Length: 124
Image (cartoon, rainbow, N blue to C red; front, side, top):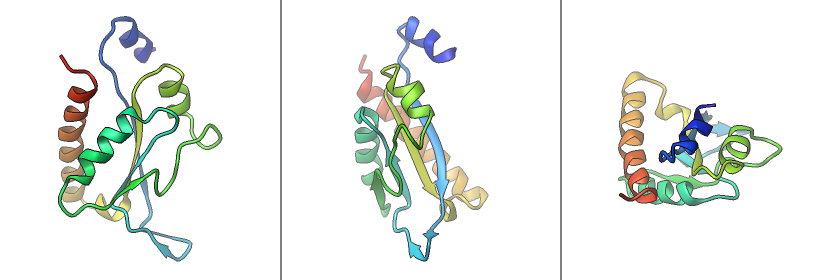
């Protein structure tokens, strides 16, 4: 598997799971633009939470609107936690990525912030 090969080469590796969520669930508005989810290992989650909250005019949930668990998730517990790879699940509110402009903005933001997070977690 690619993750095991990267670990064997001692290559800095992050695992990022990306999902989206509805702006309203069961009649309740969800105020977050995005959520940073993590389980037992918060290394990457805490860094990204800090970086995203520093962005102008974003409301970022800390393990909101969901949280990671062994019962509800697979990639994070199995591929991240069990291997000791810094990991995070990011949830972006669907109305923020409903069009090309929103998708491009979030892609650029995440590329920039994940680069910063990598340098913080794996300093040269």
